[in-house]
Amino acid sequence: MEKLVACVIGSGIGGLASALRLAARGYSVTVLEKSGEPGGKVAQYNEAGYRFDMGPSLFTLPYLVDELFGLFGRRRADYLKVITLPMTGNYFFSDGLNLKAWSNKEQFLNEVEKTGVNRGKMERYLAKQSFLYEHAADVFLFKSIHKLSTYTSAAGRKGMKALHRMDAFTSMHQRNVKSFGDSRLVQLFDRYATYNGSDPYRAPATLNMIAHLEHNTGAYFPEDGLFGIITAIKRLADEVGVRFYFNTEVTGLVTKGCRVTGVKTRDSVYPADLVVNNTDITLFYRDIMPNARMYRKLMKRERSSSALIFYWGVRTTSALDVHNILFSADYKAEFEGLFKTKELADDLTVYIFISKKAVAADAPDGCENWFVMVNAPENVGQDWEEEVLKARRIVLQKIKSALDFSIEPLIESERVITPQDIECRTGSVNGALYGHSSNSRLSAFKRHPNFSRQYKNLFFTGGSVHPGGGIPLCLASARIVDGLIGAGK
Image (cartoon, rainbow, N blue to C red):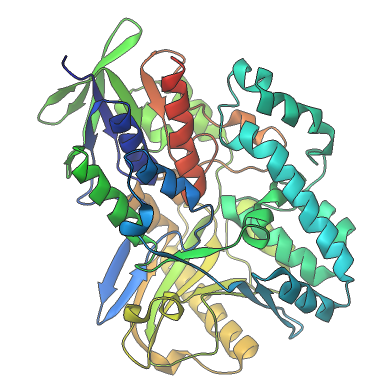
């Protein structure tokens, strides 16, 4: 019997995961990718002996990757080795406090006491986030929230019973102030709003559960860097017969009635019994399946923040860790810049990611690869040359004051990525890293569903649809689509 044919548009991590799940269901799978390589935002580049992960730098919930290999009776460890990081974050505050977020809970609680906050408060806070995740994840992260069957399932009933404890009617910041009182711990946990490009002063406190993933389940790192995840998944996909066509831009769909029957490129039409789109949902309705009403609707919604990133090869061996955060003195002003004025604040929180600390081959001996990022607003036509100069000046001064040394004379290679560059390279509207923001209690429900209401065999994965952006949630979107296909939608 001839296999059914599935086409996946885009080879970001959500598209790759969908391709594998479809292959495991017996489909003949074709992946069409506009660029020359897989990965989407999960990318890398090499220069002068330095290797940089260009996009995501955090890795949690590795079992979501393990699942993909398990579908074919394979072991992820045979393709991709992962280590557990002893420290999830190395935090530097504007008052001079350095707080290390150890993966070991007792060690972390000892650090918390540096702030004068009783460890019991932190234990209760982390227990609350564990509770939120346990009751919400199976409903709001790993299933379609746009299907009634989700809420009538056992997991749905469990989640709905705990709805009154989900903290949806207060902001992340308000809950963190009530939980700690100490402004430094508030800032530390407010920062988790940036993991989906949102504003802790407006995003619902339900999102505080993001902290659970690092502080209760742990942070991990692939031995080949974040791009190693893409390499491993692509290798498996090749082995199980998934076909890839790179430098192949999709220009439209062929439809008949309530079904998609093919995917059009500039040169060909690929017949399809099922289609999964892994491109930005807003651009999908502009370029692939034109729908002016949907496009306008999506363009009106508030988008997430973006990023401005410096990739520095530096001639030094620092005392920093893999993940380092140098906080600003005025966090609220930063988020007002991100979402209201659309400009960089005068004081910025600086994130420094050094994969050399985990992967020795990522920089020459005696050197380190510094991925230095500040949150930035979406691209709405700012003068990014000026913004880069401003950010570089602030970042260099922040490093000098927080770490007590000057990094500038030690920089021997440099590359800069702006929101405009992110928009051009990844096809994300205005360079928004996570699609739309999560700055209201209904944001999750407003995200585009993982299925088409118009075409029965059209599905959606990736960071611009439910449940959101970042490696774990993109993998979750592929899992949701798989469940919808298995259930006959």
